[in-house]
Amino acid sequence: MADWTERFSLAGRKAFVTGASKGIGAEIARVFADAGADIVATGRNEAELAETAAAVEALGRKCLVLPADLADPAATRAVGEAALAAWGTIDILVNNAGIARLAPALEITLDAWNETMAVNLTAPFLLSQVLAPKMVEQRWGKIVMISSQSGVITFPEHAAYCASNGGLNMLTKALMCEFAPHNVQVNAICPTVVMTEMGKAVWGPEEKGGPMRRATPLRRFGEPVEIADAALYLASPAAELVNGEILMLEGGYASV
Image 1: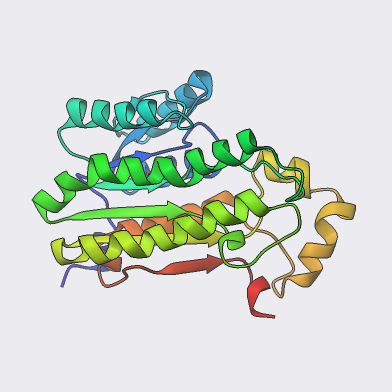
Image 2: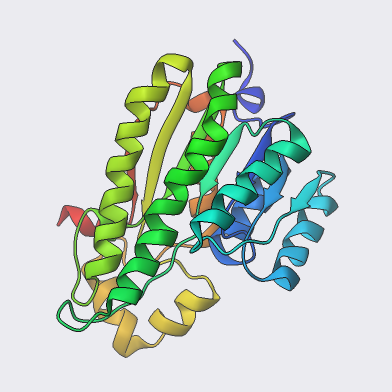
C-alpha cells in the first residue's frame, strides 16, 4: 500500500473548480495545487481569478482560467467543454459555486428562485454531464459538491437556498448510483457558515453570528481551509470507498 502522502496526493491530476475567484473555491484551488493538481479555475470575476491563478502557479502547478457565469446553462456547458478541449480530460470536478438570495418564502421573486436553482443545482448537473464521461472512460474520477448544512436543516428566509442544496445532496446520491460502477466517486460537503470575507461581513457582528455560534456545540464557524481539506480528502485516492456521502462540516449544529 502507498504511504499516506501518496494516498492523499493529487499529483498528475487535473481539477476543475467552480467559484474559484475567492473564498472557499480559491482556497480549494490552492490546497489542491499544493497536493499536486493542475487547476481549471472558473468564476465571474476575471481579476480575482487571476489572483487564484497566481497562487496556484506559485505552487508550481498550471492554472487555466475560464471565466463564466454559471447562471447561464449554455455558458456552463461551454466552460466545461472548453476545459476538455484544452486539457483532454478532467479528473476531479468541484462544484463549489453557489449563491444565496434570501427572502421570506411568500416574497422571494421567481427570478431569484430561478437564478438560485441555475447556479446551485443546474450548473453542477450540467458540468457533471459534460465532464463525467471522460472520468467513466478512464475509470477514475471524483466529483465533490460543496453544498450547505441548509440542504439538510432549514432556516427562515432560506426557501430557495435550502431547496437548491437539498436537491444538490440528492443529485450527489443519484450520480453516485450511476457512476460508482465505473470507479467515479461522488460526494457532498455541507458546511456551516464559513468565515470568508463575505461570511465575516454577514455573520461577524455579534448580534447576527452570536446566537448561531452559541447554538453550535463547537462554538465557532468554519474556515475556508477546513472545507478545502475535506474536499482534498474526498478528491484523493484515500477516499475511494466513500461514495454518496453527505458530509456535515458544521461543528455539531445539526446534532443537537
